[in-house]
Image (cartoon, rainbow, N blue to C red; front, side, top):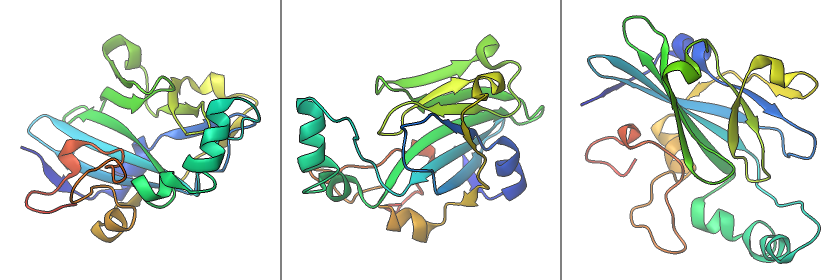
Length: 193
């Protein structure tokens, strides 16, 4: 069982640095965090917020569908998920050494990625490149950020009021009401948030 807590300094130390290449819009507006601990680990969930999600591809059926229904026109994305666009990254620390032992995120293939061991052994602060119009990630090295737009936002605690505003958890999921990116340990027992 994990116990949630707030530690702004620890969140800032491990908060990811975001890289966005030209053509990926808009600029991220916030990084919210939640944090918990168990006997051996500290878990940090970083929720990156963008003011909107919009497919700017000019051609193709998928681009046309997105513009007419999902992100433009009917704005189904907002109706299904809630305001703005929120994506999540989890950083897990060894409680004693404070070294990163696991990183989880969603990649451009919409598959959950988990990095552990040698893959992340020398990472002190993770760098993530936002690689798609719908704000999916790839873990990068600081050197791979050269020549690209870099955003180092100060993390803010993800309060219950903000959690509800962004509609992270729905009372009931349906085709037009889906939970947003989050990690199970972030949910508080006995509540919908």
